[in-house]
Length: 68
Image (cartoon, rainbow, N blue to C red; front, side, top):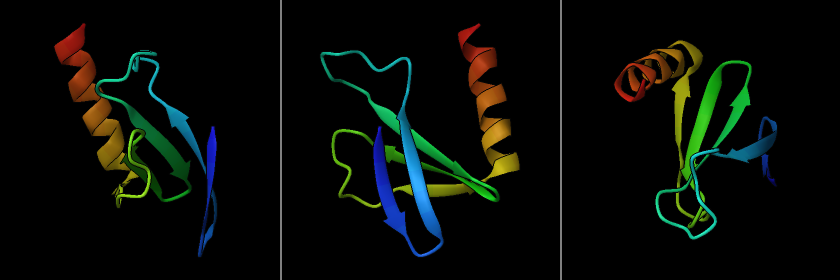
């Protein structure tokens, strides 16, 4: 877990359970009351992406439909 200090507080980052130990496509997410932050776990210095909670929920639903 990696914690990043921001102007609004602290973000606690969690790596995707689909990320393998050998690298590859790794994603980390951090949630706060009004947004979900997403970043590349291999390059945490690059800017991430912040989306609204409802948008994130729609994305997760879409992805789950494709996987399941």
